[in-house]
Amino acid sequence: MLLVLVFSFSSEFFFSLRNGLNILDQVTVLGILAIGMTAVIVIGGIDLSVGRCWRSR
Image 1 (tube, helix red, strand yellow):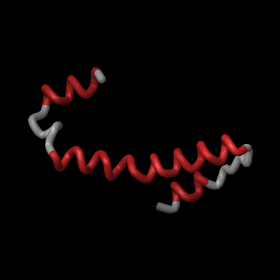
Image 2: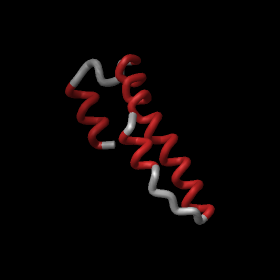
Image 3: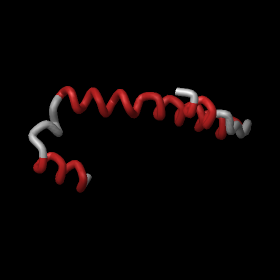
């Protein structure tokens, strides 16, 4: 939260729509992989292939 506060005062473009969409675009793939891996680990089938999926992007 401290970084958000610092960057919001240091740049007038930090809270822009374009920056928000860019951050959302960058986080989407990692978030989907994290949700999938959480489900796999909870079920008990530990799977390490997600590294290959992330790397091939």
